[in-house]
Each structure stands twice: as structure tokens, then as C-alpha cells.
Length: 238
Image (cartoon, rainbow, N blue to C red; front, side, top):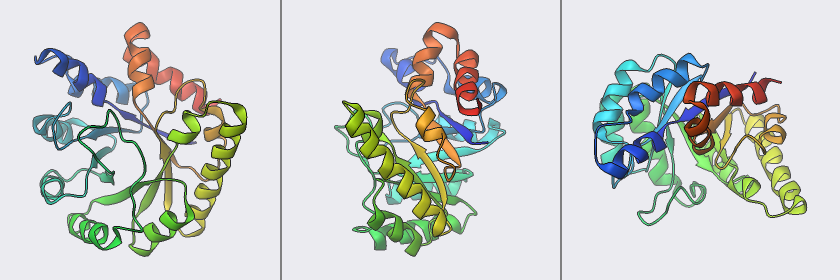
């Protein structure tokens, strides 16, 4: 069965909207794990717009499943990862002005820089995933620099305006997952996935884990976080 990694960034987003101490993403992580999540994802951004350094440190101590730290390939973030030692990191592109991550990492164009990051964090026993668009060039580049896994960016599929475009983007994801597995990479997927577009991605056998955040936190407003996570897992395993 595929694993569900729950991104809790937007618990912190709500906290930061008032600049106070609640809701606490640490509490949210515990609820998500008890509801059946296989891991917790947090993105420590350069501007600290939601998750803070303190959150990362506390979560490293309390998460019982797997902690995935999303981060940019910068010296600052490498230093934090080496100190905190999450179970894995996912390298993502990052721009201050973006609302959310807008596309995949250009591994092919930045292979030298990314390879050095992989080597530095692997010294601490940390596995590395690369968030990439479903493109052959990026998958091959990820394999060449010895990433442990890739996370296929499903944003274009999720945002498709009609069935024809969605089918086209789905084929890209399917082919990318197959190619990643052929090369011996772990294959994850995420971005924009929600309760109504999940089934076709779940059906791809080569995908190991799904990374989902916004849609789960949004549903949690109405149903509670425990129910929101369980509902997502039910769709994944039906």
C-alpha cells in the first residue's frame, strides 16, 4: 500500500496569521500520526513564513514515524539539516514571492550544486529526495547524482482545466514513475493532490508515497484533522 506523508505547514500558516503560539504544528503532527500517516512533512523556508526553526527542532524529537524536511539547496538549510538530522530531506526550488512551490527543481541544470548538498547531508545518514517535474532529463540527472528518491511534481495534473489536459499530464506522471523505478530510485509524488483527483495517481504502481498537505488541512477545518487524514487514507487504500 502507498504511504501518506502529511504536510503540516498550513497549521503554522494559521498560527502566523495572528503571530501567536497556536495552533501548534507539533500537536498536529501527533494527530496525523495517530490517524495513520506514515510521516510528517515540513518546509522550512528562507523567510520562515510558516514553519520556524523551533518547530523543526521539537518535531525532530516527537515525530515517531518519519520526518521529511523540505528545503532549498542553500548552505543555511544544509547546516540545519545536518544539525537536526531529519529522516529525509526533499530539495525544492524556492522563491520568496511564490505562494507555494511553483515547479520542479532543475536538477539537470544544477547537478553540481545539488550533488554537493546530497553528499553533505548523507554524511549524517539523511536520505535525499528531489522534487522534480515529470521529465526524462530531470529523472536521469537525479539518478546520476545519486539521489535516493524523486518526488514527482503533480501540479500540472492537479491544475488541469479539462479532461484532455489532465490525461496528458497524467501520462507524464505515469511515465516518470516508471522511469524512476527502472533507474532504481524511490518514487514519491505530490503537489495539488486532493480528495477528488487522487484516484488516478494512487493507481500508479511505481509510486511509493504521496505527499499531501493543503487539502487535508482545509478539510480538517470542517471535520477535524484526525478525520481528514483517515478520509484521505481510505481513498488511497480502497
